[in-house]
Length: 389
Image 1 (cartoon, rainbow, N blue to C red):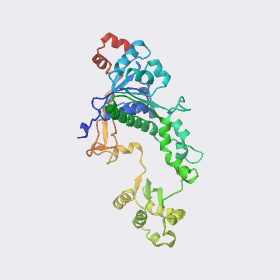
Image 2 (cartoon, rainbow, N blue to C red; image 1 turned 90 degrees about the vertical axis):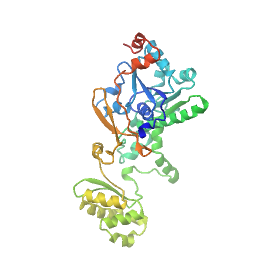
Image 3 (cartoon, rainbow, N blue to C red; image 1 turned 120 degrees about the horizontal axis):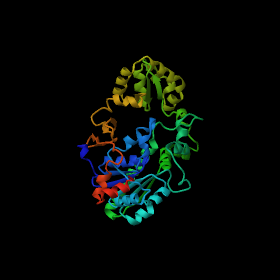
Image 4 (tube, helix red, strand yellow; image 1 turned 180 degrees about the vertical axis):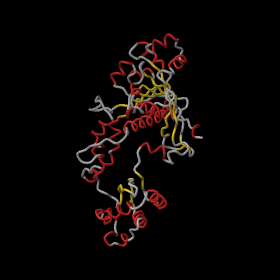
C-alpha cells in the first residue's frame, strides 16, 4: 500500500515560512512521512487570512503539519524555538536574512549550535547581486523572460499558476533529501539555499539554449515558429474548443484519414515534413472545417484509439469531473479547522502502482503548541509565555 511508503518517518522538520514556496517544501516532506512542525506567530500565518486566489494557499500547502505558536519577538519565544530546533533534523524557512538574525536562527548561528541540522532556505535569489531584492513569482517571471515567452508580443503574461513557488518548494525538498542521504554518512548538516529566480531561469533554459545554438531569440509561444504540421486549437460541432496535434509522420497520416482528408496524403506539395509545415496556411483551414463538423465525443474516441494527441480545453473546476482525476487515489481529502473539507491532487507519482493519498488535515493556529513543547519538558506557564499569551 502506498500509505506505508513513509521513507522520512522519524525525521523532524521545523518549518517557519509563509505563502507558498516554503510551505510547499514542508508539505512534500510531510507526504513522505516526515513530522513537520509549522511555527507560526501568535496571530497565525498571515496566509491564513487571504481571500480570492490566495484563499487556497494556506490549506493546500499546510496539510498534514502540526502548528506551534511562538512569539519570536520575545526572549521566551526565541528560547522555545531554539529548544525545538535542538530536536530537529531539518529547518525550512523563507524569511529575510535580517529577520532570521533577529530571531537567532540565521545560518551562521544554527550551523554552530546544531552541526547536524539541515537548513533549507527558500529565497527570492541565490547569492549574488540580486540576493537582497524582494521577489514574487510574477517578478521573476518578468525578469527571466518567462512572461515574455508566455504572452503575445507586447503583452507579457505570467503563467496561470504559482508554478515557480511550487517548483521552488520541490527543489528545496529535493535538496533536503540529498542532504539527509549525505548526513547518514557524514553526520553533518548542510546549509541549502533555493532561489525563486534561479528556479524560473531553469524553466526558460530551453529558450536560452536555442539562442545559444541558433543566435536568435525565439518569439513568444503564441507566435512561435511551428515544428509540426498540426499543433492547434480548434472548435468542434458543439462549440467546445479542443487542442489537436500531429507531430510525427504517422500522426499526420492518421489524422488526415480520420478527418477524411486522404487527398492531402497524395498531394505532391505535402510529401515532406517541411512541406507540411510550410503549407499550414492552407491545410489548417481544411482541418478546422472538418473538426467543426464533428462532436468531441466522436473525435475523442477516434483520436484516443489512433494515438493522436488531443485535449478539450478544460478549466480547473472541470478536473473534479474528470474520470482520470477521480479514479481511486487521484485526489486527497483534507479537513479544515472549521470542519469543512476539500479535495486536492495527490502527489504526481505512484509507489507500487498506487498514489500517495494521505495529504493530511489543516492544523488550527497553535493546536499542537502545548503538546510539542510539553514533550520538550516545558511547563504550562513557560509555554504560554513563549506563545505570547
